[in-house]
Length: 179
Image (cartoon, rainbow, N blue to C red; front, side, top):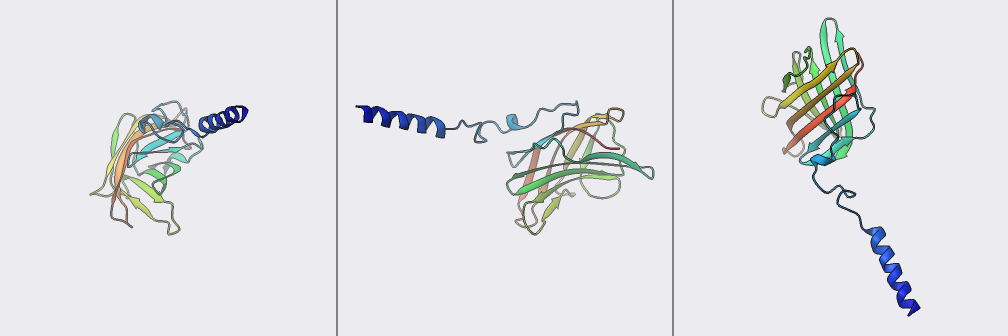
C-alpha cells in the first residue's frame, strides 16, 4: 500500500511539474502576448511575424530621431527570434515626422520610409519594403521635449531566399529616442 501511495504521489508530482499552460508555451492569442500600445516611453517593441509574437524584451533597443543638415532621420528596431527573423527595423529617411500622421513604408531612399527584417542566418540575409510589398507607420506620439516616440506599424516583405511573403502586423513601439 505504501508503495502504491508513493508511486501515485511521484506520478502526481511529475505530472504537475511537467505541465505548462498555453501561455507558458507561447500559446493563446498572439496579440495578447505583445506589449501594450502605450505612449509613455515604456521601452517596448513588438509585432506579429506571420501571426507569431515578436517582442524585444531588452527594453534597451535602438531608437533615434535626429536632424542632420536640415533633414530628419528616424529609426527604431527590435530584436527577437521568430520564424527565422532576428531583427525588425523601421527607418524614415529625410522625413520630418508629425504626431498622428501615417507614413507609407515603401522604399529605402531619401524622402521615404521603409521597413526591414533581418534573418537569423550566417548569410546576413535581409528584406525591405518596396512598391510591391509595403506597409505603413503611424506616429502616435512624438515628444521632442521628453524624447519619446510611440507608434504602430505593419508591412510585408519578400524573403529573398524563399520568395515567400513575410507579414509584419500589429506592430507597436513606445520608447525614448536620442536626438
